[in-house]
Length: 186
Image (cartoon, rainbow, N blue to C red; front, side, top):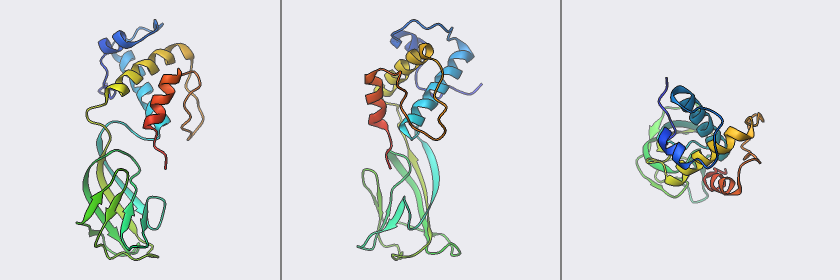
């Protein structure tokens, strides 16, 4: 059995849940349901919440990596918040070798790379190894999970719209607002 990804124990959930749940949430059933709700919350927010190391490759120029008119490379990581950078590498063309980057500044939702000999119009790639997410998980996300689970247990099935990050209409307004606060828009 996989470890519970959601940072809420069974007792915390029972204490925080506001409605009587028709399902017996003990052991594996609880873990499975909590993981399903946690995954759906991440899906609605368009990003994972749990802090972990990620490795992404971005084509350049593109949606996530571009050279500014001032001549520095700007990277917009797919997931936020940025906790730490494990490495940034670039190549000026798809056939060249990876070159590590040592000079960069992490802004709120972007990374500005200085001193990389990347030119506007280069059609290369950027490799970003970084840690993003929350550690520890904020208390409002824990409460949100409890509300989400309590509403989900009485509301029916999850939406099956592939690739959408639509917040379900059956959720209370305070839950919708909280999910929108964490939603990744890019």
